[in-house]
Every structure is written in structure tokens, then in C-alpha cells.
Length: 308
Image 1 (spheres, helix red, strand yellow):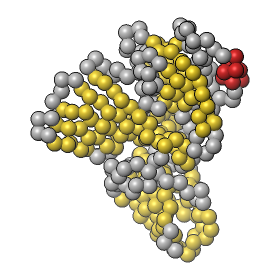
Image 2: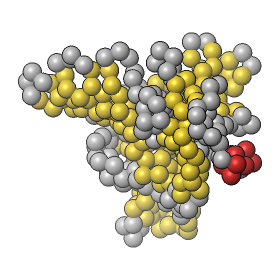
Image 3: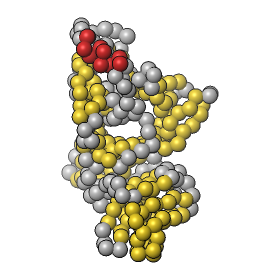
Image 4: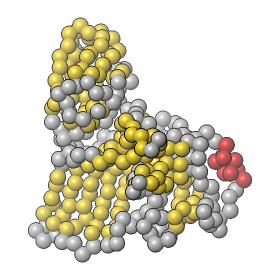
């Protein structure tokens, strides 16, 4: 590893080396990201694409266990410069699965690629360290500084500021990268392309910690599709055949609906005089679903469920 000219202050050295590390990988986390891409020389103008990212399940290769990261497109738009029309595709795409693993002792996250582990995120870096940029012809970026970032719940995380090929590259411990979880610190995707990624929101245990997941109604779901409800317990989540919803108290009547990420109603159940609702998931395809729970008094709550 190269060392940049900046010197590491003693205070930051002790904070980084002896502070408690906040892991990134967990199945109760959800990321929503957008990407704007301009293909130079193309007849199409800039495109904007939105993705859900979430962990669910694991896979073992050669004795090493990897977490499955689902990378699922749910919205895309671009301008056709010849017809001056905005082309929109809001169909839910099949998720791309990436295999990631985290070494919490080394504070590093690796992705399985081309039958080997490549370094994806490195939270062990100190001020003045540099990191090579894959596919950038031997270029590297330098870690300028490490500062404190307060999340929405009041917790404090380390924020890493880089310069170099992408002066806007910033990493947040336990959250990932502000310009894309899988492409955190490089701007050039391929020759002739320029990529601008942005983390729209990050939630943990259905609590918005970074940004807000009340994003525009791109896919036919309510504007608060990823909202929170501390009064209910949905388990197991992810689930395979059955899921159970513990209500805060017995309800005379409760109605539950499940919507897929394309806004289609996939399940509807009504219960009477219950405290625990049983949900059979046998008719649902694997993926993410948004539940609306309507109580007898008309109050509506929203939860997120992943079907494996």
C-alpha cells in the first residue's frame, strides 16, 4: 500500500485502531441507490436507474462462507435524443446476486469475482493511506481524512474522505459508500462511460439511518413503501413458507396485503380476534414484498418482507 503525503494525526490513529468496528453485512439492512450514466457518442441521453440492495442467505465456496447481496433494479429512465422522448421502464428486474464476505477483524469487505476475492471496501485505512482503483490503469486514491458522522438515530460512525480519481468518494462505516455500495470509490466504469452513483437511503431494522426511504413513487408503491412500525414483530424475515406477524394487542379485525416491488397486489388476508397472524407464502415468488397492515380503527402500518 502506498502512503500519501498527508500525515496521520495521533488522535485519529488511536480512534481508528481502538474504536469499536461497526459491521456492514446484516440481513436487516436495506439500501436504495440511483445511478446516472452517460454513454458518450450514443443516441441516448443520460439514463437514471434505481436499485434495491439487501442481504439474504449465504453460500459456501471452497470452505468459505459468503453472504448473498441481492442487487435489484426497479426503475430506469433515459432520453432518446433522436425522438426527444423520455423512455421509462418501471418493471421489476430479476435480481443480480453478488457474493460478499466481511472480515470484521481486518475491517474489510470482499466480493467474489472471477473465482477470487477482490477487496470491495476497506475501513482499516488510516489518514494518508492510498487505495488502488480497479480498472483505472494503476491510478489510486488517497484517504484525506476521517471524521465523525451522526446518523438519524444519533449513533456516530467513521466517515472516510478520499481524493484522487473521484474526489466525491466517501465511505461510512457500517453503511457502505455514498456513491454506490458495489462501486464505492471509482468514477469510470468502462472506457467512454461516466458513472454517477448516489446512496438515496439506508435503513436498518426498518429504521431510516441515512437519507429517507420515502422516495418518489417510481414503481407503483405508496410513497412510504419502506416505512417503519415498532409495534409489530414479523418473523422469520427472510422467510420461506410461513411468516408470523405479532400484533401489539389482540385485534377484532385486521387486514394484511402484500405488494411486490412492481406495485402488484400478491396476497390479501383478513383475520378476526387475533394477536398473531399466520401468513402462508407458498404462492409468492422469491423477492421483496411490502406489507400493509390495516387495523379495525383504520390505522395502516407498513412492513417489509423478503421471501426466499
